[in-house]
Image 1 (cartoon, protein in one colour):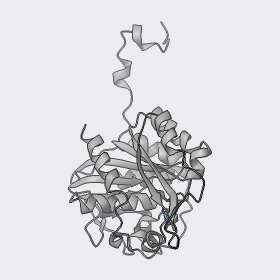
Image 2 (image 1 turned 135 degrees about the horizontal axis):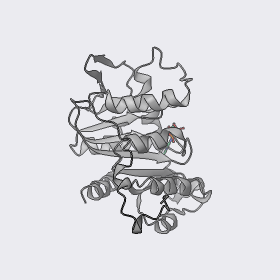
Image 3 (image 1 turned 90 degrees about the vertical axis):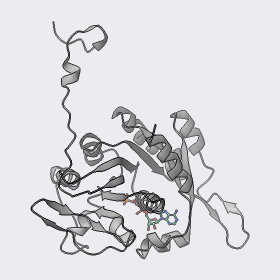
Length: 274
Ligand SMILES: Nc1ncnc2c1ncn2[C@@H]1O[C@H](COP(=O)(O)OP(=O)(O)OP(=O)(O)O)[C@@H](O)[C@H]1O
């Protein structure tokens, strides 16, 4: 009899034979937890949140790494002020290590000139992301953060299928939260059976240095309602902070003293230890 797609009354074991597309790690690597940082569209602060999460976990004493899967728009090395090139040998590629000990790989650490554009077809881009996972020597990593390309296209799909993602953090701006873009990211994660650790609203508010009041520059926040609707939680509401922008833009994210993601880190750790 042909397949009815109703597995409840079928004795065939084809489900267990479903193809596992996960890529193997390099034999010298050990990565305990992998967290994807995603956004529905570009420019909402996904890379900034990835970098801050890595810095926060590193400060907590965890061995931390960042895999920059945003191949055509890599921003991670710049946020950390890293401009050197990766080296490798016959066994694999060595990640660059930042001043505070965070391991990192990004296409910008492989290009001859970091301003060179990556004008590659999709299969080459997805192949590069897979190589970042399996050909890099990720020795002794507790938490790896993957800065995903924005949207729900080919590369995020490859990351979800090829890397053993333990959970994702969705970053959105207040405008995105009303325009359904973030809901698409949430639904994609659910389709791929990837646990959603929570939502981060970026550029949520601004503290006026003159009057000391908090202003919702982009309108009232809808993140609590959306988190409830999709049965997830709010990890943080980040302000627009010129000091933070300065640290990122000058490559000094590791020197930023703000603790905006400390509570989020605690929640993520708890979620991943369940
Ligand atoms: N909360 C914030 N306060 C001040 N500046 C911010 C904040 N969030 C992001 N920015 C600034 O906005 C710019 C874009 O941020 P970022 O590169 O993290 O976005 P992105 O979502 O990763 O974009 P893309 O996916 O297109 O690479 C950066 O210059 C960053 O410094």
